[in-house]
Length: 117
Figure (cartoon, rainbow, N blue to C red):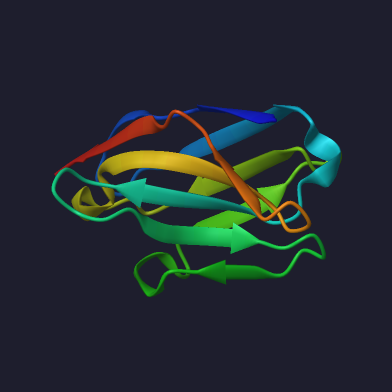
């Protein structure tokens, strides 16, 4: 099993920046892609950004040019640098680890990001 712990959320003013971190522990050797999702009450969880083992990235249109996803050297850590934050970025942000061979996804507990106008 993979355990994920997010950190770095908080309250920031519009236009500000935050950096989220997600650290994986447990059976991390099987982790392939990692991703960040976000969810607001009453809405479905949505993909924010993802990164493949080879380093290819994908972003939601709403965050392109403002957010950057990256992985640490050990590849069991993933970051989300969020710049030019907007009030509509307010959400709980979740980290996901994908294990392709086991067809298993693991989720963190989430970290709250609040952007004030």
